[in-house]
Image (cartoon, rainbow, N blue to C red; front, side):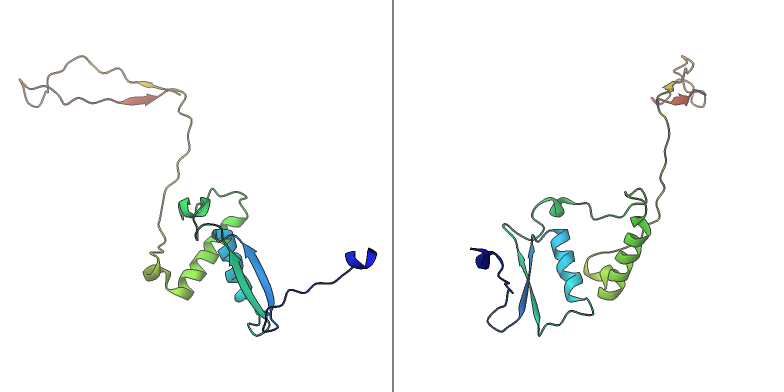
Length: 145
């Protein structure tokens, strides 16, 4: 029985190649396959990569992802790596034309809205610039300090 448990198995296909099996064709599985076949030590004469997927490519949570990069990613250390890698892949494969990759300038705001209350406006509904007509309906908020 001990001999049965101590065997060595090397997965080879009919052509003598080692088979690397990746389970799942979501974003992680596809990226894993990509980085395996682009690694300097990968040799297609010795290895083949097989992705096994139960449904369809990016059919689960990956297919519903927003496809965005954000400065608020967690952990924070991955932010510059992620931005750099996305730019590098876009530059290598024409991401701007192939899949609409583009860098955007955005603004991120943070605040405490617990002390916001409605501002008290005067009760005058008449438009001072146009006598006889009513002011447009507006609402405003004021931040208490």
